[in-house]
Length: 253
Length: 253
DNA sequence: GATAATGTGTCTTATATAAGACCTATGATT
DNA sequence: AATCATAGGTCTTATATAAGACACATTATC
Image 1: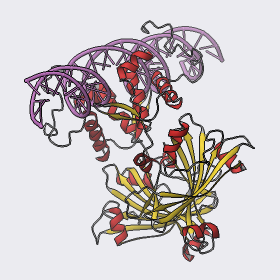
Image 2: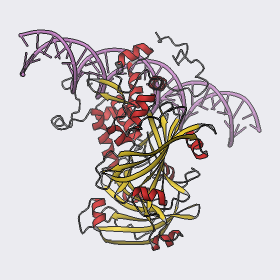
Image 3: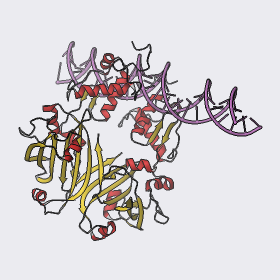
């Protein structure tokens, strides 16, 4: 069907790609898949059509679809299961634990923290929030301040900033423990990437009191910007972590 | 040649693999390539034979060689260059900067630090060193203590521990600034992976004096175990980093 | 020095086989 | 008759092989 080759690129939808960056075919396919996920056409947990069906639908070979899916699987955006199919990744607790939560107790066993909200408000974004979230000055943000416990011990106190335009009314209801799953289910926003900056600081009297340490005690400050599937920055959080009995774990392959 | 199939696994060298894990063919090929690098047969910078030559030599198809090389490229162990060939990765400064050096000044521009050795000795490994490096109690290690400067400011003071059995006589000559390149050129040891644990601590009077801060000043403690190609732990280092004007940068895809 | 030829490696497509998961019909047992 | 286990069949992904098209770098040629 596409064996005869009037063009080396059988992409019939976008003939004007060549002059610009000219991404390889499998990457165009990958971007198209990401767009479907971002648009909610393929929600989390969705079982995608088989590789051959996708290939026929788009008009490329099954191997090209496979290469696109391989990269998506490497980025944890889809999960492949032999014999079952390929699923859009979900933000279940285990995935968040392995992918986004880097603070572990020194015994090395990862545990998911419990959270307790201290305060929530909607206000005009500060300069730092505008910079971190890449939003206009004067835009409104929701701010959530909470403590997180591991094994009942308060280990983290953090402040989250969320653009009100993306998460309207998020401070009104109960803010759940597993935020990324909530972003997904209520707002259709999937967190795909995150960047973190770490510093060592000393605790202010207020933060120290919350964490049950003396003022001036050292803590790890983790500033995170989380990005959605389409690359927008949708969450900014600053976490203060006690590392007396825990550590931030990183590895470079 | 391997078309007739008395076994589904055409690996003639190791017929006893099947009962155990049974790795796919492309992974066996990948492991064979890693072994060649670890054995010094393929030194850093080496231009490997073309995919088809490798395929013919091993007796698998070119696509299988490609899949093995793809994974190696994803792990930064080889570098592919279209039209030129595939090369064994080298520990040049730029690669180390991007892959292993995560401390950047707050302006975001990465710079490679200068180093100044404070002390070097060979001694019996401490309990912590035995645990970190996975060596026998009583084994000897080389210890190097040094300060690292960025833009002339002392930002890091660190202690390295190296098994004497792997790096004999490393403390005798001049210890160079770019250690991983030195491991490679003088000892044929390539650092492939590293694991880090981060904590916030306060500086001891001695460390504080070296870094030009008051005692009790907060600092980021980074404990790194570096692994060679064959998976052996070959370096343990504990770095104390000032983060007043810098931060540790991490990202999760 | 500019241009063409050539070799090499990668990209894309195609095809075949293997293995895991799921469904269902069959048959035996209770 | 109802229940359970098993054996096939089918679907999907995983793995392996192969071949043509394209991109890039080098070399040869004019």
